[in-house]
Amino acid sequence: MLTALVIVFVLAYAAIALEHPIKINKSASALIGAGLLWTIYAMSSADAHLVGEHLSESLMGTAQIVFFLMGAMTIVEVVDAHNGFEVITSRIKTTKLTTLMWLVGFVTFFLSAILDNLTTTIVMVSLMKKLLAKREDRLFFAGIIVIAANAGGAWSPIGDVTTTMLWIGGQITALAIVKGVFIPSVINLFVPLTVMALMLRGKSVVAPAFKADKSGVVSTLAERNIMFFCGLGILVMVPVFKTVTHLPPFMGILFGLGILWLVGDLIHRKKDDQMKINFTLVHALSKIDMGSIVFFIGILLAVATLEHTHILTSLAQWLDRTVGRQDLIVLVIGVVSAIVDNVPLVAASMGMYSMEQFPPDSFLWEFMAYCAGTGGSMLIIGSAAGVAAMGLEKIDFFWYVKRISWLAFIGYIAGAVFYIVEMNLFGR
Image (cartoon, rainbow, N blue to C red; front, side, top):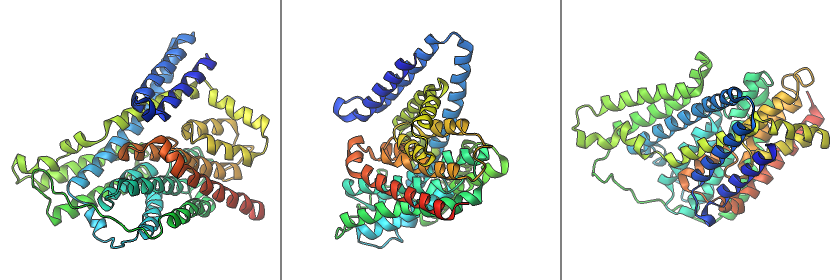
């Protein structure tokens, strides 16, 4: 069974990577892969009830992420419908691509730590459509946004799902992870930004022409500001909601979506239906990329079978026996997280190493947060941020490999080397 599962997963992954050459949508490959993996697991298991429990558990985790993604994407679409991003774009006056890249990179980095890397990527990639007319420029910026969002999420307990897992599990504490991983994360972003700035030196920003809505209806300045700050405020308050209520983030984003819906209805209540149709939440829901959401469902359910059948745990144990050195093992886990989802990898590692052997805030856990959080940037489907950017800008897998992967890799290694050297010199 295990061999069959690995073969099917590898074939499904290859089909996703080769989406454009074989002309088969990645969502279809992901769903077929997930269906085959769970079928093999169910047919090979003598305990149907256990398989059903595992599927229900995986579905619950997947649904939470998907609901969060749908809520965040809808909020961004509502703000966009009101031209809310003009609040930011109107204040960015630079005409140089390099200056804009530095600005976008560090705004994404810090915003990701406050919100999370997925939401930040959706917001910033959407913003780039308002700033850049050339698709090639937007693709490069999307790559930098993915790197910056994952780097920003790694040093914050609420910025990346794997860091949050370690935080909730007690392996790290909030203040320690910020102190320990912040500088390596900055280096992880700074190195690719420096190289990219040299590559884009001398190029100018080509802004898209303003396009009014097809209906000829545009929002007023007051409506634009209200919906922008309300939408941004809701996204910022989601981590606060989670901290105060201990409810999962998807509940906060859905609650916020309801508030935004109410505010929108109150703002446009005096307009006739034809005038306000394009500003409604219903219209925004019709514009979100459902293909990307379906792809996300397929990927998460497919990887879940590798977790429940202990394939990932076996891989972690094999690494422990073969490699031996903890720093190299965690580095490898970070690289593997670009291929396989980092969540089950970190979950397997949390189960593999005991808290007695590695107490809270030890080298292993902090370095795990950095590597698992930033390693996914090396492939476009290696992180939730990458998957979101891939869907929003229709980024080709191999374009990302050729143009962005090596930048993410050198940033990943530079930050890791700094952390290892720092721990050896000033180890806590």
